Structures are given as structure tokens and as C-alpha cells.
Length: 220
Image (tube, rainbow, N blue to C red; front, side, top):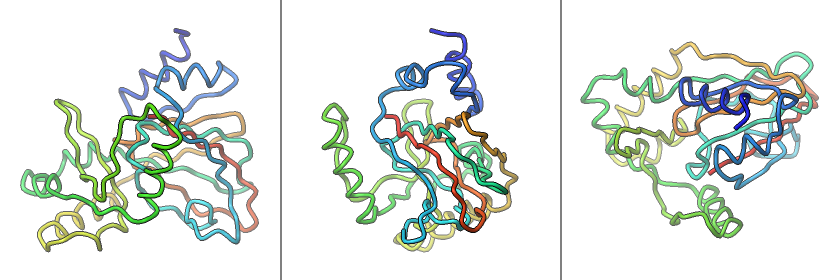
């Protein structure tokens, strides 16, 4: 394995994210070391799109679809003035909360919207070797032995079923808002990789008529 790829993997394990240049080594080698690309998407502002990720508005901190273990963004064109990605370690924040709050967060099963379910169906159909079931809900906190993973989108609070869960979820939302994120503005030819079950990511507001273009890879 090339030294550059080892560095990416080491940074992902230590920090949950890594910034690197696609000129240093082949992206395919990074992808194959992380897993399998299950979705490739062009991410650029589109006036007619209802999707928040394709708007110029600020994108709040969240995780992507839970079937994506890692996300890699490749910068093709950057916004002239803005375009900062923002990152927070969502697991570190979870582990800093009181035990009772963590226990309640552990109990939360988030009901998935129609878009998430369509994505699940599409990803499974497109990737026959993807070992996954289509479920109408997914735990906010998932624990596999010593590993803890998070599935978080702050607009999902309205889908919670009881006040205790809503209170704990709101405490987490407030903690996210009060945290100081890492801010990264990719240059063309640079990439950003994150552990999607650990790192919450978002984006600053883009400039009007922005021509920013990233290629997003979901890796299982």
C-alpha cells in the first residue's frame, strides 16, 4: 500500500477525516482501501433544485445516508468567495454528554423519510453485494463492540415519539450548535474524506451564482 494511502487511512482512524491532494496518488487506490464506491454524485448549486445540498444556502451539520461508511469529496471548482466545509466529531460530542442523556440517545430509533427509503432501495439494487435490509427506521446511535457510530440530521427531531427522547435529542442539537467546527476550504484537485458514522459535516452559504462543483463518493 502506498505511503500516501496509509496516511489517509491513519488520519481517518485518528481524526475521522483527512484532506489530501488527488495529484498525490490515484483515487481508486484510496477507494479500494476504504471499501466500495456505492454512489457517485456531482454536487453543485442548482436554482431549480429543492435539495438543500444543491442550494446555495448554508447546509447544517449532519451525516449522510447510513449505508455510506465513508464519504469522499473531490473538488473540481471552488466557490469564488466561500465554499468552506465544516466538520465536528459527533461521537466525541456524544461521549462528552451525561450518562443519562447518552442512554436516552441510545434508545432513539429515527423514522426514515421517503427519500431515505428510496435511496436505500436504489443503493441495494445498484450494489448487489451490499448486505443491507430496507428498514423504516434506523438508530441514532449504533454500537458494534467497541465501535460507536452515529446517524444524525437535526431536522429529524419532529419524528421522535416521546418527550424524553426529544429533550435528549435537543440537548445534542444544542451541543452541536455550540461546538467549534473544523473549517476546510478545498482547492481544485484536493479531496476531503470523512468517516460518515463519526463526523458531522456541513457547509457555509455559497455566493450567489456560485459555480462550485464537487464530486461526492459514498463508500460502503
